[in-house]
Amino acid sequence: MNNIIELSAFQGSRSPKRVLASENVEPFEPRVKVRRQARRMVFRSYTLIVQSDEADLMRDVRFDMRKAQVKLKAIQRQIAADREHAAAREKLLASAENRLSAVIAAARSREP
Image 1 (cartoon, helix red, strand yellow):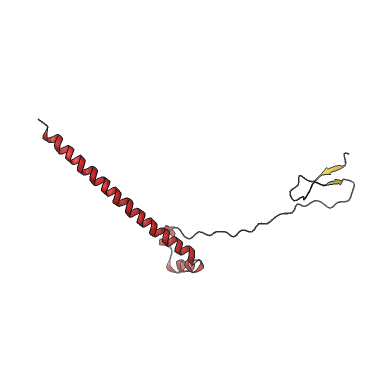
Image 2: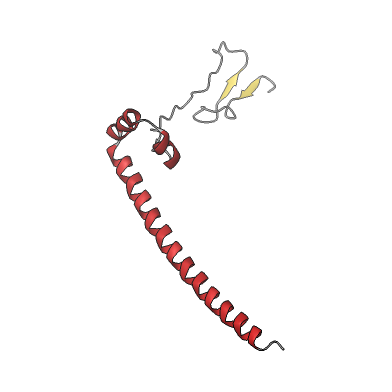
């Protein structure tokens, strides 16, 4: 049985098939599945939003209003988070400054 060719290893074959080599068979061409996926376009980065001219930005917003609104909400959330972080950092630094100043003053008063 040297004249049997196994075609099941080829992509696109539906089931294992055995074909006699002596038969006139057209060359096997595997089926190619084309999956068309819609690309998810990302709205411009913060830097590109600032650098772009108004006409280009208007075009992008009109092209996908939902993404523009999502980007705006993300910017607003980031601003709020940055403000909270800055306030917490200021409170921490002020507390550290007060404690360190007090300890330095106490240490100076004890110097001979």
